Structures are given as C-alpha cells and as structure tokens.
Image (cartoon, rainbow, N blue to C red; front, side, top):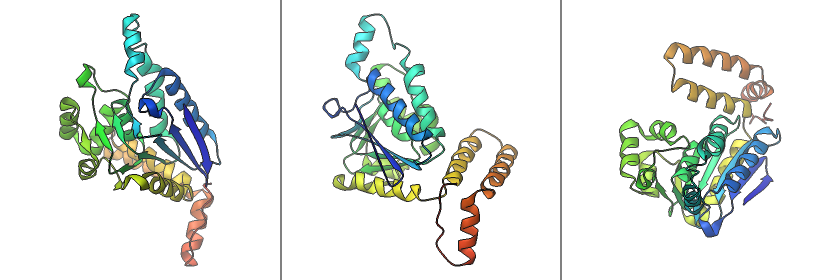
Length: 258
C-alpha cells in the first residue's frame, strides 16, 4: 500500500491504493507512519516527497472500513490518536523538508496530510475538500492547527464549516499551495523542489521548521530566545562554515547536511 523510493537524497513516499483513491485504511496508516519514520531516521535522506498513485492524492478515511467499525460498535476505533496524530506530528516536526505532490483530490484527512507538509505542489486538476462536517465529524489530522496558519482563522472557519471543495487555482490564491502546474508535470516539479531542498543546509531547514512552529504559539520574547538558541546550533555546523567560506570566495556552497 506504500511505495518507498530513494534517489538524490529524497525519499518519495507514495500512497498506493489508486482504485480506492488512496483512502486510508488502518493498514495504510500504519505503513505510512513506518515509511515516514524510516525517512526521518535515515541520515542519508535530506528531503521527503509525499504523493498518491493514480488520480487522487488521498480521499481521506476509508469509509467502508469506518462503516464496519461503526456497525461493530467500535466507533472511530481510536484511529485518530493511534494513527492520524502520530503521522501529522512526524510530518510537521521531521527535521528535514517535506514536499507534497498533490496530484488530484485531497479530501478530509487527505487534505490534512497535505497541509502538514512544508510545501505543496498541486496539479491543475487537484481539489481540496475539508469534508469532515459533511459526515458529521469535527476536523482531525491537525487540520484545525495547520489550516488557519495557512489561510487565517476566518477563512479556515469558512472552509471547514461549509466543506465546499476548492480547485487548484483557488487554493493557490488563498495560499494553500506553493504552486500549480499541469497534471503531467506535478510529480516532476515536486521532485525537483524536493531534490533542491535535499542539497541544502538540512540543519538550518530543521531549525527553521522549529522556529516557525514555536513562534506560532509563543510571544515575541520566547520566539527571540529560541531563535538565538537555534542560531548558535546552526553556527556550529559544517554547512554554515562552508557557506561563509563560499560567500567570501564568491563560490556556490556545497552543503552536506551537517
């Protein structure tokens, strides 16, 4: 249910249930978390690309499995705590950049997964739908946290309460995606972006992710204090020394991620 490919220091993780629009069964969620942990723990991986096989990025929870759980009296079967939350926490805190190639529909938890990535490249055929209220549920998989940071509180409330789908052009206008490209180019463009990041200063990227997440929920003095700590950490890296040398020599730095 997951394809895991490595090239150019990029781990490409593909949700691979195309006949079911990559909807998320328990098996797929467990496999996705395993793949993300593998990428996070591998020092040779310096960027991650997340995408879906076929015509969808991810249609969210597999409702057939969910209906079976309801019929058996298991409710949500604690899947939010056991599966969705760990995946989203890992995407947002992974100490390397994560790019989503949104090749088609991203609905419900599928949209949440895309929003948890650092950058999103969308096919012109992509659609986003915060479909939770449409089936009588609240948002999950971090959407309440990520969406308002991307588009603002008022717009996030509108998107979540109404649940109306957004096409790629509108998503770009609202700032939900980094860029929109023709459908045939989405994976190539996203991979090029991930490969570019994989050649960059990985420690500085990780520090940037930490600083942004921290500053979103802390006052300015706390943000300034963490920035100072992170700068000390980054200043001690080989990449910073190399970049300083290259700047003075008017050369392009050769980053190693260390």
